[in-house]
Each structure stands twice: as C-alpha cells, then as structure tokens.
Picture (cartoon, rainbow, N blue to C red):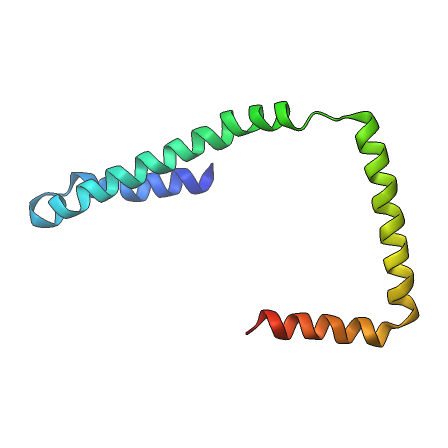
Length: 100
C-alpha cells in the first residue's frame, strides 16, 4: 500500500503540467496511476478471496502428499549427507549453468 501511495503521489502532479511537456506526461501519469490503483484493488480485495476459495484444505490429499514428500526429502537428505562433495559439485554446476 505504501508503494502505491508513493507512486500515485509522485505521478498525479505530472497530469496537471501545462504546455508541451504536460501534453506528453498527462496520458502517462493518468495511465500509470490508474494501473497502480487497479492493481492495489486486486491485491487487497480480489486475490485474497480467490485464494481462500481455491486453497481450501483437503484432509485426505494433504496428509498423503505430506507423508510422501517427507519420505522423499528424508531420502534425498541422507544421500546428500553421505556424499557432501558430490552435492557441492552438483550445486556448483547448477550455479554455473544458471549464470550462462
């Protein structure tokens, strides 16, 4: 909310400039301010409602998925702790690949 207010406060005065500069910046300022305010409205009111509706807990699926994920994590952790140098080389390779 603070970033939205700051952006609006900075760009609203540009809409009221006169002359050639005002004619260029008026459309930009009004477009940007309206887009930021619409984004704020969706972030504060619409998205929490949609998330609450879509992310309802499902007990049976959630428990089964949690156990499977925990077992897989424990297996992976055991492998990494057995051979830390191989894990470090894999991480280094991923970092090198990501920086290309």
